[in-house]
Length: 380
Image (cartoon, rainbow, N blue to C red; front, side):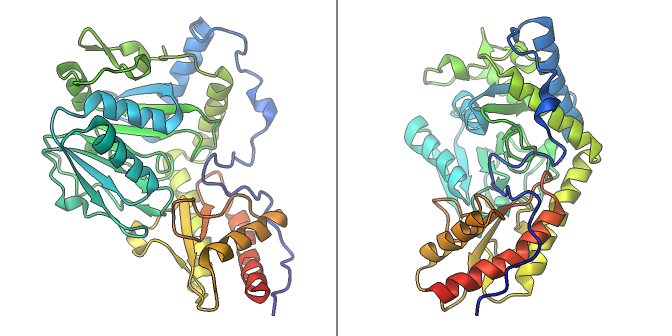
């Protein structure tokens, strides 16, 4: 029998895992101070870009001697730039437990063709980070956006490593506590946890990463858009706001507004708490039902942003079709948009629980999952 239609709807049905929901206080008018039609090289453009860089440092607690740059092509561009510029000096340990990490493995093994060992875990699982050879360069994602599996901490990464750690942190930054002393290269896109506008990536380099850039030249040609050095020295301008190509000042303004919102939530600690509170609402729901489970098998490695769920009821005849039908039914009702599992991931649902989501909206969504599940069971 179909569950009665819930009486309460989420105020904001946007639970997409990227681009992600903007803060509930966001308005288009908040972008009125954007210097549109002005050169990003003008004083006002440089000032805005510098504010974005230093605001990132402040909110995330990035050490003063780490370099922060705004680069093209979102997190993907930042990761490709890092791998093509830094890898090859020594062998690499390529780590993956979801689709984006698997993409980095493919790029290094099939495109750069350097000596590399791939460590791949199934969806829902995680690689044993303590078993890696940190004399080599290690490339990994902190939070598997398409699997809902995250690093529990950085304890497995040795302080005295010889290689570099290159971390894709795009759905972890601003939602999880990243140990900067264990990360030599970190990338993210502000379109994820802060709900910023797309197409810009952030590249963060430790002093060890800068040293590598200035002492090692890759064997392959580098496109202009990837070049971080000139004459064997780091191009400092990239890390003070002189971007490689033209940035959108509207997107930069949107990011500055998001950083102000993050400060008002209590900074990083506040954002982490918001994500944890959102995920707790999903956990309560899942624990009380026997037809749905987290894709992540270990609670210690369960993401608090990209929360991935799978259906386990034996009555389901076609898992993929069933999951799509549930997501479509919720979308048609206007209560949850874009929550189907990623195309390469196991069939199920993926609910974004980052800090821009309100816990009240997650709580309001949960009865609708009951409603949609029972409706599809009956419709089979």
